[in-house]
Length: 175
Image (tube, rainbow, N blue to C red; front, side):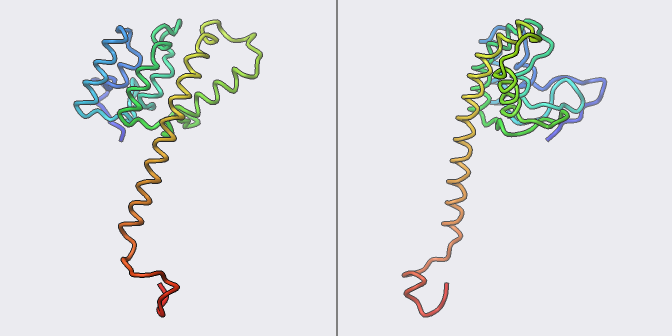
């Protein structure tokens, strides 16, 4: 869901704000835990724009306001906390291209792995270890979400299947 706010009262939602805050990491993690406990949705679109275009995971991966990326490179625990709270790294943003956080990471790493870094800023090159680690935890989360969906589908099929004694082949009437 997108929250439309009165233009005079635009504020970032707590999860979005803490993903790019300059507060110490421990304070940001505590604020994220508090926001999640109070019912904030880790998949909600929001942020500084009205309506927001990104989800908390998008903000945890890209803080264009921070030119040295000091806080951003510390965000792996933030990402893990959001994923543990149910953030889905497959959900897209509303930015042009509508990429998910995992797609954004894969695209960045594809460009990085091409090897020509002559036009890259040193600060951008320093993001590679963080982005690699973030991609791995997101892929693990996607596997868990897929397994959970498969288990839920199987359970639903079992619950809706008609009870029968014997197989369809043993009966005179078709199933």
